[in-house]
Amino acid sequence: MTEYQKAVNVLELGAKNDGSEDVSEIVNRYTKETALYFPAGQYKVSQPLVIENPIFGAGYARGPQADAGHTWLISEIQHEDTDPLNETGVIRFGGTGHFTVENLNIRCASHECGIYINPCVQSTATFVNKVGIYNMRGYGLLATKGPETPGFASRPLFLQNMTIFGTADYPYPCVGIQLDDRIGDNRFANIEIMGTRIGVVQEASFVYATNMHIWTGCLGQKDNDQWWETTRSIILGKGDANFLGDNIYVDTSYVLIEFRSPRNMLSINNFMSWEDGSIQGCTKRDAKLFKIPEGSTEYPNINLTNGMIYVSGDNAHPGRLNDVTAPCPNARIQNVRILSNYSLNADTWKRHSFLRCDTPTYSGIVPASDADQYVRIAAIVQEANGSCELTYTADNGDRADFTLATKGSATRLLMKKGIFCDAEFYDKFEEKFCTLYVKVPANSPELHYTVKTTCASECYFPLDLGLLKNHPAFTAKTEILSSADDLGYVSEATSC
Image 1: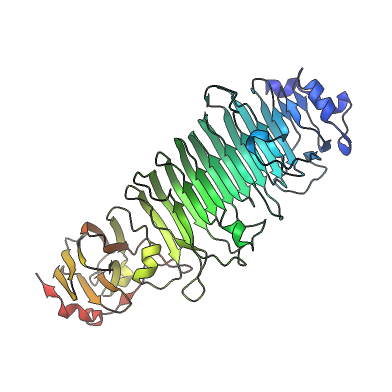
Image 2 (image 1 turned 60 degrees about the vertical axis):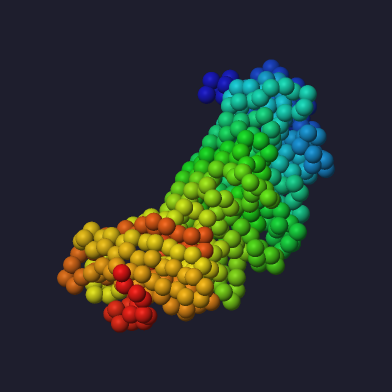
């Protein structure tokens, strides 16, 4: 606030805010001396504004149309080099980088960055707040350190309340935010990145993020397969790059999260993904949630807790996102719900159910309204020989233990039934299923239960049907039967 109150009005220095005259020379001259204030209007920029003190505008528009009620820096810079070390920017930080850029909008013209920080130096406390960057084809915000700059820049960037928007033509490199090697401990909050090819690239150290929306599929080349295959929401790069986030929404990318090093770490609470259908012209239907380096024997650390992933399409009309499996055995994915219209079969849930996670333990409720009806609460998918063991317990004392085992062509269901629990095994689909049903006793309150997978071979996939809720009904009841007689082949199982 002190810097803002001391800022000099650029109109008093001779700048024009009607877009008629270039303001680059005036800004670059006076930024060496003082903070600058840009009243609402449009300011033509033909050379990078190399700021050495804070700059402030009179309004963040949150939309790409330049108007008279907000501050707009309209670039006429022509820059085609997409090498980060040869970049330029509408705003470029000079000096020590202890600056604030706040309450304004930037409209790019070519491949220049919206904001370019090079070199990014130690403890700069750079603060970017309420800034929109539009029509960008290069980088929205790029922070780097050329090879001539020694050391590591820690805690340099605080970015919040930003919109970064791509273009409708071919966007290369078109990266929303890129933080190069030796730059870390950055803070992001309330940021939307839309219509870019890549949302965020983090090459080293930590990003701490909250409330981010990364939407890569909505603008440039959305019907171009070559472009679509290069889209990414978040890339963790070659170094010890770590992303810790809360309320992160990644949307419509060929790869939602790519790890390029086994030392990467990703931890997100409240994670959401939703394919929006904007890339209907692309033929590729093998987009995936995670990508790790080919042939890895070491694995990144992955933790997703709470959230929802919408897998669009159905068997007849498959969508683009068709692999949400965890890429490594040490991934931890808990309480992330998958919404899908695909039929329930082994092939589908092999791709749509985080199969490489630890064997699940989960809890649920059978409502009192379903008294005397059997409700399917769990399933095991069998792909090949092996075995799986489950234990069901309920708050009314009911318990059941069962094992499904296959050797050669013979499959056996060994079950110690509970009073209000039953199971079935059948060859209804291409692969084999065993499903567990429970019911609420007549005239009883709702039934709380827990299903614990005590053992599962790699050829069996225990499924929490409470998390695999179908869209758009959002119902946990994948099937309800009126009596145990309808369970079919239970009587053929061997009880123990």
